[in-house]
Length: 177
Image 1 (tube, rainbow, N blue to C red):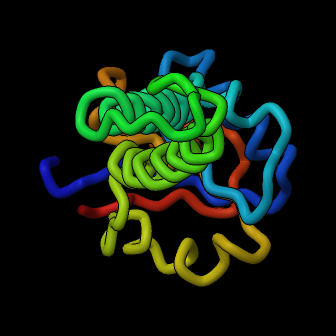
Image 2 (image 1 turned 180 degrees about the vertical axis):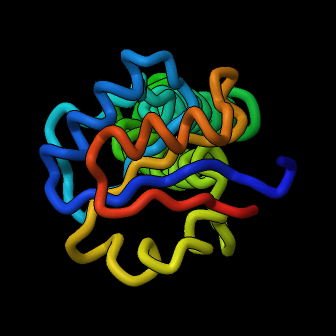
């Protein structure tokens, strides 16, 4: 069974996929993924997807960028080059706001994007679901798919296949690694 990634069911309508995801979650399956050509309201909850930490990565990166920019300018003005210009104090923070803002946005964007790629395992040049011919042909156009993965504790090839067949899909396929 080491060469099986999971079992995939193909549906014709979005409502069928949503209902199948809800039934699979209620049945006790937790390691599954749904594929749709467009967003389906409630599908993420139906398959048990919880909030991602991607937004937290963006927030932390922005805070690091802002604090780093402010500290960098303070260290330059106060410690490295303490030049009195026009009688202003050496730590005149209002002049540093534009640079602080710009580095906040820069760090948030760049580090956040890199974190997004890492957390989503991207780039991913190969994924086992593309071994299913019907998935490759119509997943991004007009069909909806639910794949229960073999790493799920409840996964049994025959029982999972029978469960998915009971949901009235167009086709049930084994997904090979």
